[in-house]
Figure 1 (cartoon, rainbow, N blue to C red):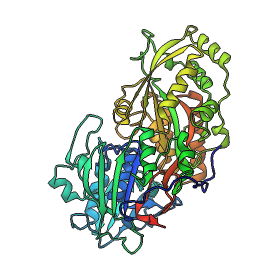
Figure 2: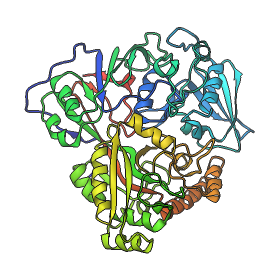
Figure 3: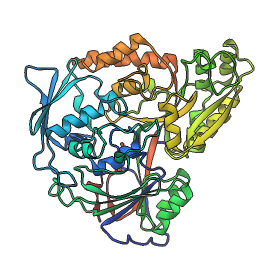
Length: 527
């Protein structure tokens, strides 16, 4: 059962935990590190979480999910020009090195985010031009009206153009290609915290930006952040229990009571804006990592439907997730515009019907295929993959599981080098268009960068692109429903569940666990 957003798993009874070395230092840990510091290179949760402490977008979401000002103080559609959004910029803002922030930085950054190697370009696919109107106002002109443009900008970070030019960081890091750049390990933002040191996969240290424009608006009670990735679940929990860290972002489900029963600690829980699912390479003529020669079993919808029937979401919820998940039939969290209870219904499990479908498709004896899975990104990700492996085996599909850290896993998806894979997807825009642009649209220059399925439907692509310019929200929602009907019928993805967040932290930390799983440290206070 999913807990209510405000549920707190109680503290008490055992020996107290050591206090932080300094009440102003936050020692923060989670399973995986940020993949890079380049703010436009990887659209991935932990990467954008860390970036939000250092860099800022024009607008952001507060704890309630409401869009609020960040580097822009005012915005809207230009009167008489429905294709033009204007953004009035905050004056008196400086970067960590003291350089002044202005409109040219915004123009540079948004153009950078639209470039080939950017992992955020789908969010700006409807943009025709970004231009500076004055030192503190910019316009974004789109190809047709775009009613949700601000929603697309909440993770679109702004860089200092002069800093980028001086450090050969104008181009976005080619992360999938293995490129290392100055911007991958260094940063100069306008955010509340500035980078002190960076050791990838070891530790990142931030210190308070004493010249932060929001000094009078936010508590800024944390003056130093020590961020440590700890992949091993037992080690991560032990670090919290011993007082080595103050806050872990992902308490393993098997250790929830252990943490919550420790005096001085709490587990705070909320449903997450993220769905876990499997993707299949449906577009290839032949798969690379299977034992079927000359054809692709995933290209047959009956095979995909059989696999969908074979995955027992309730068993995964009960055994692997220990009730800390919500089984689903769609790759869309309930927070998102377009979600319905009907779409969310879990597919009926029927092993005999699944076997019959495989036989009809010509695979009565089954086949063998490799499943690529991360082991440090999602809650019990490898455990979910192991469970699915056993379930698919019951209908004759032998799955060879290959689990690896996300830094090696995600490039398989981005580079189209996987046939069968796990992925989790959050939706920061709270709108289905975001899912369609990244996961359903044919992979190309502006769309489909995370669509490793090879699925391509030109008619559907046109509908997806049309969403950006549809101002009649009733008509837009009708198109969204039509697109979901096709996605569900094609079964290009196998949804598993919506995640539940469990943060473990010292009880004196006053913060909100929100659906985005993105700590907003500038809001944090000490009790």
